[in-house]
Length: 486
Image 1: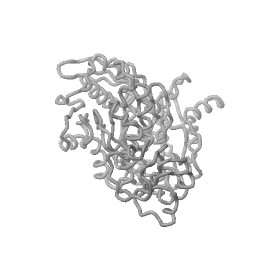
Image 2 (image 1 turned 45 degrees about the horizontal axis):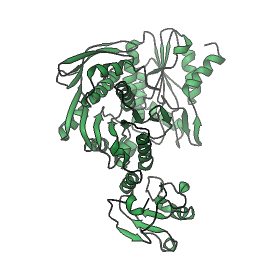
Image 3 (image 1 turned 120 degrees about the horizontal axis):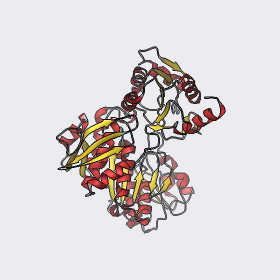
Image 4 (image 1 turned 90 degrees about the vertical axis):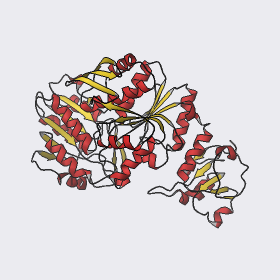
């Protein structure tokens, strides 16, 4: 593609070299650069892409997009340089152009909030597919184009990967793309230039303060999605949902259990295996039997229903779509079904204070015996939530086993020490090795108890100082039951 087509709509700050060139591909990782490629010098928090300009040139780059003045020695090469501010926004626009603005041919639905994004995206997928649409999902567990699964390690991909996915979706005749839109992706312009049919707000509780520094910054990051959405679907029962409602000017649809909500639940009946409720919209009601327990899943179902109703899908189809979803990997997932036990083992992704609190409260609703909770905190992330999780994990369970999560570059022992600072009870065990912690939980369990293993959910890896290792809690549970007499 010609450079002028790739950079359509952009004004150059300063240029060096020939602008009448063809671009073969777009890269921000110098290791992936090939002959004739365009390299973006992205300034990250740990790595500055400007340090890798020489590498990119040696790999065959035809064009360098930079925000700093290029060094004289680099200008001697037969490579074009364009100096521009805000490389990330430039990259998003170039990616959109390079992949033929395919996002404009899709109906985009964006979901943001601290908790509930993943489950809501799976519920939306179920409803839209029930209505006969072809659906893609971009999110935490994986990216899906129809039934094709693409592994990912980011909730929202960088702009280059994102627009490449959009092109594949259009080629596969996808109608809707449901996106989990993280606060990081909004601040870092990964979704810059996109317009969403609906922006969904689930809730806001403490998380990611290592990145955002203040809760106000965190909220303002989320707010960005709704300034680029035609309609806003808002959890009005959340304090920040109320604030959001008053601060945006597009069409707003509220959901919850209040009588004043546009989409609401009535006659709610909770059980250990699911929720029965009446879905109410305008003057119509339909019965829903959701095979997923917990008040938070009721909220997820309502936001998904509200979105699809706004898209013109009949309430009968919405109810059918909710009724047909059996669960989401790593979200209140019963990992012990096939073992025919007289107790449950549940896996959940809960890794923030509020999500741990909510899943423990849900588990308490259906547990007759003890709750044994295995949990930890991730390294290189918000340290202020560790003591809070220590308090919640020990206060709301009968036995807590405090262990390692994804320690990353930190010492797991230090993370555990931070967690214990919030503990008020003497009902916990420390076991740094997560596999051994799961074994200890199973050794302590009795009939009618529930083991909750929180923090990793769908993940099949653990991030250590030495790198990422394979670590799938389902496999560990199976290994325990096949090699012991549990």
